[in-house]
Structure formats: C-alpha cells, structure tokens
Image (tube, rainbow, N blue to C red; front, side):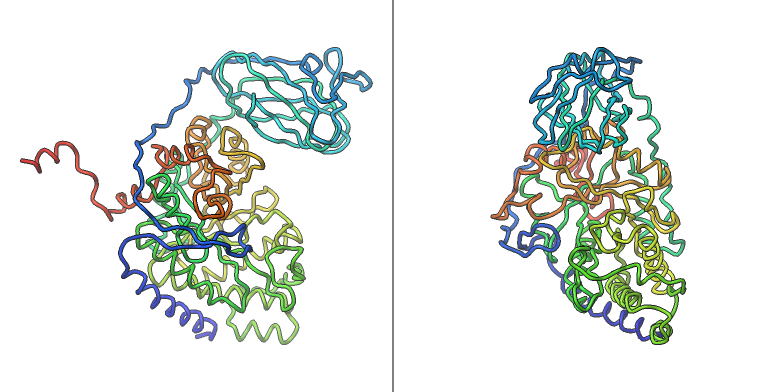
Length: 552
C-alpha cells in the first residue's frame, strides 16, 4: 500500500480514538469559543454557556395574497423628484419623453424618486433605461428599504437593465434610484408583471455524482432532495472546534440549527490542528445534526502561506500539468517531481490534498457523511485558487475530486461547488450541490432580492442540482423565499461579527433578534430537533389522543 495512504489511515485512526471520548459525553452541545472576524482573525473573547431559553410558537409561512395580472407602466425619470443635484438634460440622443436625468456626481448623494402606482400584489420586472460611460453601482430602494444594487453598462448608450421577480404590494409607493460611485443618465423606469418565477424547478433527484457513495451519504442526499423546495435547512458556522455560536442561537430562539458549518484553513505543515474541527463535526453528526466543512486552503508555500492572493506568493498556474496524478501513489508522484515532470507547486498541492484526505477518512471510518465545500468562491481572484482564472481552478477541482473519490475512496462526501459563475462551472459530474455566498453591505435581513440569483444559478447548473446558500451575513427571510419561489436547500450564517458582539452575546447588527426568532421557528425551516425526530433519535411529541390514553 502507498505510504501516503498508510499515513492518512493512521491519522484517521487517531481522530477516531479522540472521537470515542467525544461521543461518550452527554447529549449536550456546549463549548466556549472566541469571537473572530472572518476565518483568519484572532480570537478575542469567549461566549457564555447555554442556558434555558424561552420557547416560541411555530410561525406559518405567510405573505400577501398574490393576484397575477398582466400590467405595464412607464415612469419618465424627469418627472420624478430630483435630489442632491440631479438634473434634467437633453444633450444625448435616443431618449424617451422630454428629457433624461443626469448630474448625479460620484458621491452617492444624488438620486431620483419616482412615485409608482402598483396595480396588484404580485412579482414585477423593473427595467431601467440607463446610459453611462463607465460601470456604475446603482442602489434601488422602496421607501426606506433597499431592494438591491445593480451595475450599469459602460458603453455610453441607453441600455435596458432589468431586475427580475421583485414583489410589490398594491398601491402608491416611492422608489428611489441612487448611483453610488459615478454619474450616469437615467431615462425611464418600466414596470411589467413577471412571468419567469414559474421557471424555477426543484427536480433534483438526489443521486450522488460519486456512484460508489456510502449509505450514510446517500441517505443524507435523499433527505436533501426530498425536502428541496419544501423546507430550508438552518445552518451556522462555528469556530475552532466549539459550538458557542450554535448555543447562542439556541439561547436566542429556542432552536439549534441542523447544520454545523466549519472551516479548515490551516497550512499543510499543521494539519493536526484540523482534528478539533473534524471531531466536532463527528460529534455534531452523532448528536443528530449535519456537518458541513469548507476548505479555505492556505497555499503550500514555504515563504508566504495564506488563502488570500495578496498574502501569498503561490501561483496555481505553475502547478497545472497534463500528467494524470489522481490515482498515482506517493512514490510515483515523487518520482515525477524528482524528474522535473511536475513543479514544486504541483507537488505541494498533492501533499496537502493527501493530508486533507486523511482528515476526511477519519469521518468516513466513523460513518459520518459530510457536505464538503472545497475551493470556495472559485470565480473570484481574492483566493489563490481563483487568482489565475478558470482553467487552473477547474484543473485543481478535478484533481481533488478524482483523488478523493478514486484513490482514497472517500464515499462519505456530498460535493458542494461554490464557483458562483457560469464561467467557472466545473464538470457537472463532480458536484452534487451548487451554492452561493451572499453578503449585503449596510443592511439587515434578507428580503425579496435573491430570486434573480437563484434563477441565474439554476440556469447554468441545471434543474437536477440542488441550490443552497453556503455563506451569508444574515438569516434569510423564510416568508419571502417561499413567496418568491426561491427556496434554498440550506443556508449557513458566518461566525464572528455576523452573530456575536464583543461580549459573546447575540448581535443584531446583521439580523435583528425578531427576524432570527421568526426564521428558526418558521414552518418553512428545519432545525436540529425536527431533524433528530426524522432520524428517529428522539420520540415525537405525543398526540392529544395518546396523552389521554396515558392519563387513563
């Protein structure tokens, strides 16, 4: 047997021994944990322990009755309220009406306010006719609530930009358009009833791409597919092997999230540090939950090891090779390296991949299925795995998938692709779930803005893939998700400032307390207690009839 496989299996055995002690603990999910900001921040304080909490009633999924009706209205920008220096002009050709509006400046202080008359409660498409010489970010607000931010074209011609599937309620309302970082010309707004929400489909069949997947992974994937479009699984990121963030949610809402999301981000020479997180993931599963692990990979560099592009000297493009490495032994790969057939960068990646396989093998040996998310946000250039474009990123994804499934026989993984772009889509035979990371600046809570994101992802990955929110800054609005037919499979709120204040208590900076309570007690959400019952780990509450029988 290849020595690297032996080392990986030995590491897995060590993790299994430590897990036995963890599994013998009482079924209580508590542990203090420091507050951090993002995955690379240092801890500053510890959170308090779990205490009894108030219980809350179930909240049914509710939203205003929708009356679908064909409609269309056009609002000329020059007829709106011009604020902060915005002014009407006629210098450009091809505009509608008497003028267009410009003079917004670049400070985000000028705007146009249009009073719109909405005929019925339903979803609409908002189309703006805009011209700009450079791409400008534009904020759209309805009353005092932000709807979305979109980016204009940069060709200097009047162009339609449409926001699809925005839910509006009947009556007169004020809609404000504010360019945030540059001037532009706004001609008009056209509002039409939306017809594309019905295109959303929840046809995922629940078959894993790894045909040799183990039974526990198959069962979990089957559960995800059966509930896709019907329920949204709750999830929360935890830090450093503890569960303080999850305990905090319990203290606040009376419910635990069903998913414990965690991050592995240690460099290749310190993989033993992963075992705390691996053990915590296993314990969460044995307590009835679902573990989700993301690999924020610190580059295998001798000089500057970091996940962030600007903080490392590692160049993934130097690692790409035509050699098929996925099923080679350590000796064979080392020989290729010694002969100069593969680079130092490529060899370093293989060593880290094999070390990570050892960590995940320990979960396989314990029968623990994992939602596995390597190479997050692959379409961006802020992490080294996406910094050199799509080709090296896709090559690395394929290498990880093939080596994990074909060489290490990791049959407990449900593969979560988080490329977030049509151009970065990897081979669809190598991932089970497509996910996006959603963070909103200067705003609390999710509303009706993410139908378009959901629809866009489904368009380029297909209806047979489950779609989820792998990271977010605030808890999704359950009512809005069902209203807008954008029911994500699950969500995972990031840790640190997104959930805790500097004393380790609940922070309302990103999600107000009432919204958190409502989300976790919504009939549209699945929490840990509900999932445990479905797995048969807890007796269901007796019916009134059974209670009467017991009393007799």
